[in-house]
Image 1 (cartoon, rainbow, N blue to C red):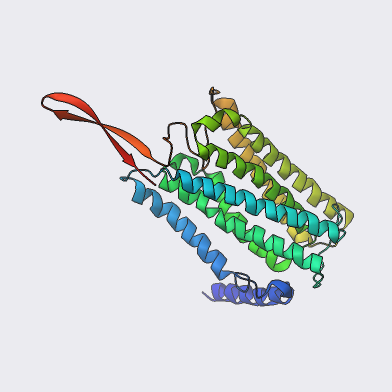
Image 2: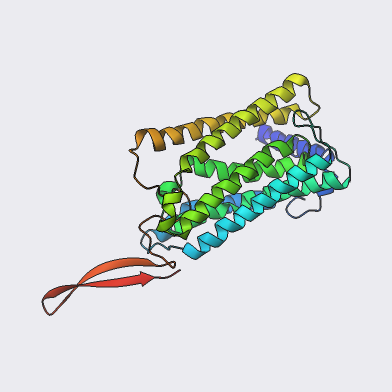
Length: 306
């Protein structure tokens, strides 16, 4: 028991010390004064993962077509804004793409970059809705370990990133990832429009390839920083390399399982929060029941709206 108490006290002292080197500029920004809100939302997310499928098990699935269209294209705009702000801010600040230490000053461009990274962190919390929509639409097979691992860890890790290093090398990965998310949510948004769009969505597998390339580039970028002695926290670079390796393994497995083992279909289907080909338009779900009247069977249709 004494060992446990000693460990708890050491952890508290370490956290207090770490706050002394945190970025004072972001201290009063929403969600940044304490890790508890971020951890709380993450716990609620995991609880919903457990309770949601049980709640929906004996209920009809929602289509949420209009909701998905609005959500996905809103995420396109948000990620485009983040990517644009990081690109323009880093260029105005004269950032190096190979080695850039954090500048904790109140320079307008540095604050602009920190703000964009804060929005990037917030976007990772908003992305919890991906899973919520899966569950409401009873697409339980889409909630893989990769999906949950990505959503839950990114939100927490980027709170750490914004709290201590909202600038410098941090801009590099966030810029690439937000740009990729513009493409990704564009795909999901188009898929949600309806089956007539599916013939234009032949490029889905290339999104996975681009994501895997992103992780290799991230590892190379962090490794170069370590090799060259870039004055950016080394522990964060090592953590980034380890984290990226886990994604390479998981995404490579996803790519192999999806595009190598499974037979190719003639028309692409959405495998994230887009609408599958069997959906009916205008956000409705059509089901057919056979009812018997006067000794004859008739079809009776029921439509569930959003």
